[in-house]
Length: 192
Image (cartoon, rainbow, N blue to C red; front, top):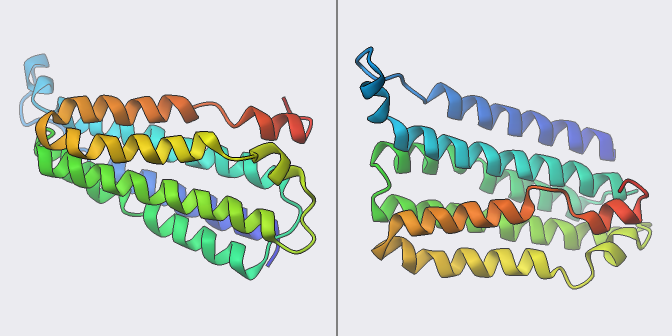
């Protein structure tokens, strides 16, 4: 399989996931501005999830710009990442419909950890792909940002039980860390 086909498939899956999430947004039953207040948890959940999926899409694209080859291991690592990302709409709806109750926020955190781990393994698979130049390995280095993100998500899990909104803030913090594509990859491919 070519690198381009893998990217196109991944783009399609992410577009479908975002579509599923927006279709699950339901308007309030009333027509006043006060009625909008009742659905703020759904909108905030959707916003966080949209940003998270967008970050994966941007960084996935950026990562594959540095890649020259893919292997079977890369294909499967990418499928695992996409599977984990496909859980995001479930967590989004559950968390939003229950106004950030602790259990849905906790499970949403677990759902966020899974693609972070999947992305970590995708990067490792790309680095190990036969014929891959050292661009990605050099740019990623020890991947402190990736490891730190996973650790911060893990810290947020017990916080979700006692202070769900603080856990949501932590999830936004991790998103903020990743909002810009990794500049090391950009420099390695002459894009930054």
